[in-house]
Image (cartoon, rainbow, N blue to C red; front, side, top):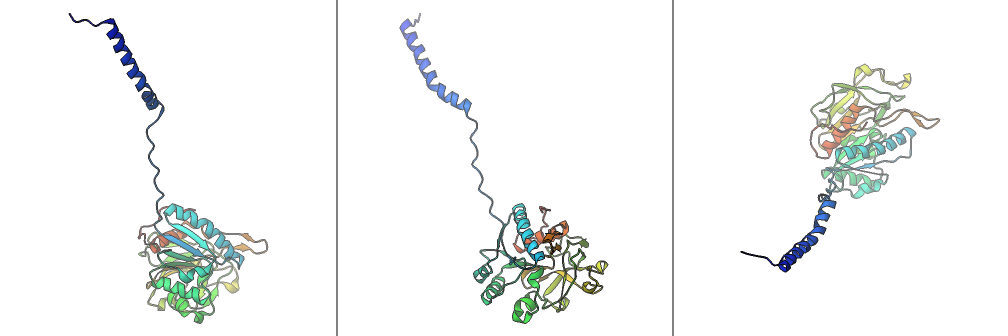
Length: 295
């Protein structure tokens, strides 16, 4: 018969107790700590980078648009995964490259110096992309920069405008372009002053008109002496030789006496869709219509 002495049993019990005490801290640690947290994901890189140039010093309606744009575009960028930088330092155009910024915006002006103009032309000829608003096409001296006003934009000199600022019914003329695939046949714009040009854009084989004033808008304007009663008025277009879009809107209604803004350029969801889908096309993301647009 096998027997275990009392001393041996005591020693075995002590050994088991020691092993248990050694394991106890690890068991308690397991009970007090949760599962390991996953490492945070690195921020997603933007699909493309946008830089917007503005003047912001003349005409309260244009200043109002610039201020509104510099609030609206950052939200739009965050919702659609691109970056947005704005600057009033137009000299940055002198050395800008498509590697630095894939899309350039002109909010309320155009380059004025020889170095700025040469830099922008070089940027566009190197594969850069551009979207311009309203005043970016305004000039009465197109001969001073014929590449930009006559060739690139195709519009030439300013001819006339409507007053006061109003909405317009716009007719989408090309619903196959990536910037307009999501637009209806007609839609109501946001409030703006509207420009007409000396050059007939339809005579230029490089210009594709994307949308124009629908005749149901006439008379367009509230001042009888500065209203349009008939005619052909392109509002959105592209030059097929470049990656570019021009939009005639970008002038808010104002109470000039008090400096109060009376309208928003970004209160038309359909018009906003053109801007976002156009930016995505310019940025090389593709032709898919935008789904995330701030209001």
